[in-house]
Image 1 (cartoon, rainbow, N blue to C red):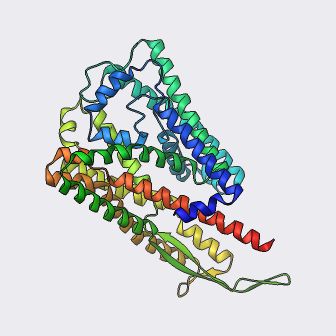
Image 2 (cartoon, rainbow, N blue to C red):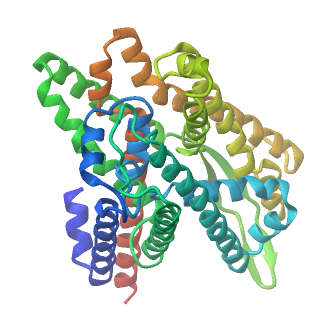
Image 3 (spheres, rainbow, N blue to C red):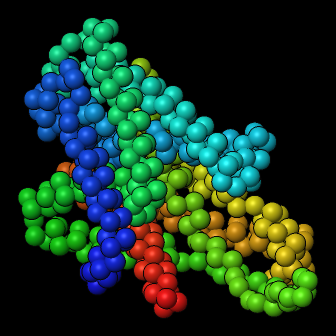
Length: 423
């Protein structure tokens, strides 16, 4: 890894991209620690000191510790990511969006614009919810001190406007990373949010017994290794192209493959399931049985969480990979899977392979997300659950985005090496 970074810094263009990405990350973190107007930071710090575990840790993870602090970038990247997922899902129901997706760069530009509009709408909804919870004192569990200096209408409107504007700036920063930096912008910012809260969870291990700390470290290393293995695992479906004459040139006759990842859905099902389960938590005060049965260590909560992840994994893969479309494109260019007839048999074969892979990937995601909850439910040790730094979701985000970024750096290094050889 260090050798790769040193090689990248030797190339001026690549060095500028890396430094630009690091600069944007610094600005992003500055906005996450900058308090929004009208927020009593002293009260927030005192309330956060005694609020750990459950939904608090999940909110801290997906916002980099910014949402519960009511900072300028409190909403983080979640409105944009949610909007992107919703647009992808709506492409199945709205033919116009599906047509734009197939129109290339111009169609993608329009989809990006629709995603921005939906992001702003979701940001207004999320900001209003967060400010309403802070105004009523329900944002931080067990907090008796008011976290807002003024709960009047004008102060609330200003705070909501600041949070929405912060989301727009975060969206712009992510697009700048994608265009001028290294990696996918929103993925890099989400990676930054997880990394930002990870050291605070690691620091809690120093107050644990040596045996418990070593056990957690060893388990964490095995978990990271397992996630790397599963994220890299793929099924390569071989594809053979027949030779064909176009004008005076001969095309085809090559062999390639279709890489189908085991975890084709990535982190999307976990985010969707977590978002849906956040709604019953908000309704816990109004409906007492929800707070009793939908707690993080209750078997019903774990079962619903697992089933939602598996269901969303199948649904998301079904809308992002169309076997019929892939089979038609292969037949159009003279490609076929050895031993499988082109057309409908190829589509059925790809669907069968993808279904088996999705089953493994969905179970993997569900087990990974439930692993800390199940372990601490069996141990019946809430204090250890609060101190556990290797949550399945956080490890998945760190490993997945880290591997993808390293691959992009390696690809650009190879591209520049080929350019130097041609020169």
